[in-house]
Length: 201
Image 1 (spheres, rainbow, N blue to C red):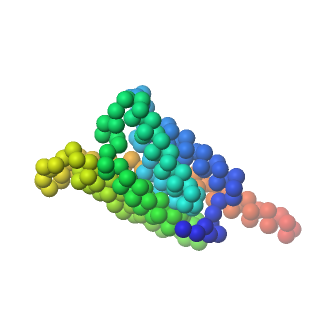
Image 2: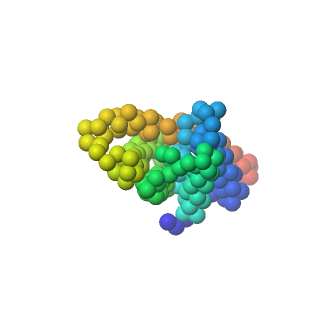
Image 3: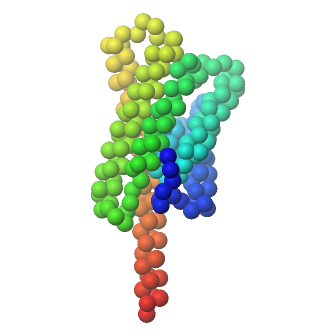
């Protein structure tokens, strides 16, 4: 992926990278204890990284961060358990879907009505989250070796149990980011207009 005219200035890039990293550490560390009850932001982070950071290096940074957290949690517990299995590499495809769709879904508040931007992001998030779920969930049941005799009917019941929760987790984080983006975009746009008006007087 090539960066384009919408890429962030370096100071904002670093700020967004730091915020998303903190969010990853704050929500994915439920592996270590039950103290943190925040829903995992991992899927949302890859979507937002694609949307705002727009750099493939950011994708690999967050993938390595998730891998480091998962390996550290496995070491902490003294076992791999359900976290790291032979299906784990398939997660890169799930995260890749979120990052790619986010990359092509960034709102443009100046060129399109806010309603259009909201619908575009909501639809993209739903589709990407669904694809990511079936990649990670399906690969886990097919490749982990833990469910050798799982029938399609049994798999359907498990999908019904986890699907809604999986695709609803990113909503809060993405909505929060969109609201901040919309507010800042209009603030700086109005500020720029006022500056031009004042300079023309």
